[in-house]
Amino acid sequence: MELWLPIASALSFLAGIAVTAWGIWMGRPRPGRLNFAAMLAGFLFLTGWLILRGEAEGSCPINSLYDVLIFQSWSLVLIYLLVGTSYRLSLLGAFTAPLALGLLAAAWIAPIPRDAVPRNVVNPWIEAHAALSLLAYGSFGLACIAGAMYLVQERQLKSHRFSPLSHSLPPITHLATANKRLLLLGLVLLSISFAAGILSQTHVNNLKFWGSAAIWIAYALLIGIHRFRPLPSGRVAAASVVVFVVTLLTLPAIQHLSTKP
Amino acid sequence: MQEKDLPGVLESARAIDGLAGAVVLSTCNRVEFYAASLCPVRAFEGLKALFRERAGTDVPLYMHDSPRSVRHLFRVASGLDSMVLGETEILGQVKLAYSLASECGATSRHLNKLFQHAFRVAKHVRTETQITRGATSVGSVAVELAGKIFGNLADCRVMILGAGETSERTARSLVSRGVRAVIVSNRTFERAAQLAGEIGGMAIHFDNWQNTFPDVDILICSTSAPHFVLTPDKLEPMMRARGGRPLFVIDLAVPRDADPAINEIEGVFLYDIDSLETIVSKAIDVRRGELERCERMIASHVGTFVGWLRTHHQMRP
Image 1: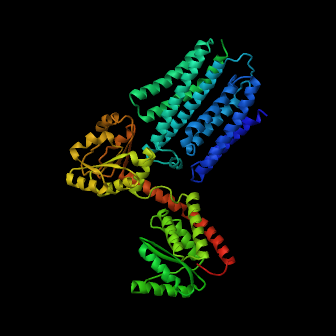
Image 2: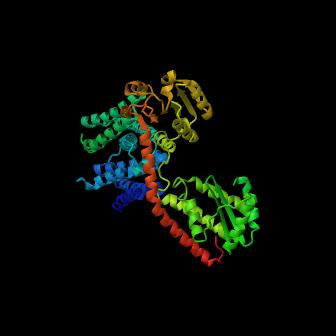
Image 3: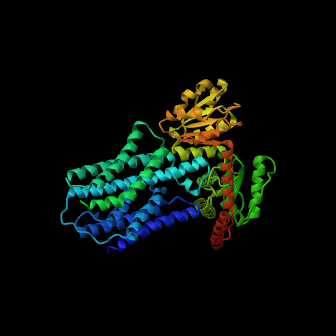
């Protein structure tokens, strides 16, 4: 039961990608409702898996890297469905599907334990801290996607060479706004998550603490600098892509350190 | 033929012997009469007489019998018979013509079916092909690019630097798409004031354009200056004062007003007349490339409609 849900979810995301690819091939790159339906179906399958996994582990299902990768994929799609409403019928969903699928694929391909890890003692502050962190990363992930779309559109506008995709990409000013709002949302969620972490009064590994703090500082600096001395949108977009990729690469290490005293 | 004349024409057409229904499509470059009749030749003679009577002389006419008439309407509705291939305004005009005839009680069952089918064909062709893709004039390319940068143009401010004919047309295209604030600056202030008056903008003296610049989103330049008016040295400090807002520069001047190097500045998107014309020509090529697919789709729809026609009496449009 547990296994087929992530598989069904991955197939849904794959269907979303296929619909978009087919549209581009046929000269109609606007993904439309089929893509949205595929994303929603994938999200529901993942939700089902997380519920079952949560029951098996007796806590929020983020107790192993395998759990975290799947939860991260779920949170990315959740933020897309909630925040990306105004863009969901455009290419934002089409760009989100490959990243969500990539996270699921990493969960299966990586040589990591996949068994449920039941928790005997559950600290609600720790649960809130971990879940909110992953939701914040979902928001940063979507900001990264909006940033990547901005850079693609900007490049096409600068070079005067347009691909069929450009007709469906939102205007760059909309992408810049979405990018900045998602970064802000992510930072707010991450800050609340850190507050929950402090309230849990749990001893944290130094490396994990400073690793997480570095991510928070990077995003806070990016938003802070932009607020007081507006940066060109292209730089904010590029920074949001770079910081998120680095964050994603450090996720396994942070998860690993979470299990160490 | 003007719209106000059409009810009278339709009324006269109804009196023609053997004619069951009629729709008149009258646009700036075509007058077409779609009629359903069991005896097309007799009906055509009646129509010729009607036009002779109204024009006071013989009018050169051509006639298509079905299935060619069916194919013709489907092509017209899909924009394949228009001067600008794939233009979409014609579909609205066909709908209007049909609606007017319907209101006058001049349509028949066969014409109703034919026009409903034509609307479906036009939608199908537009959705499934790229026949409407891209802009086909400098003005519409400018509008499309502005849309890719700013989205809604209602909040955009446009500055025209040098009130030439092309810059005026481009500005009008932008105004027609919702741009509200237009500032015109020209070496001759009277010309700037005249153009500003025509398009509902504001004229400023040429020496002052740089002071107004930080609020501008779209800059159309077409001055006759022999040197670059916009250079990176001038623009970079101005861009810093804009708080990261992008700037769309449309350089229509020959020789160029804008140094190509300004396109390297972050947030500046420069298009000169050559690049705009290249985009137009690419869009036209894309549309031409889609023509065969469109014709195949239309042929299939003609087959379906003619099949229906054969099973429902012999009255032919």
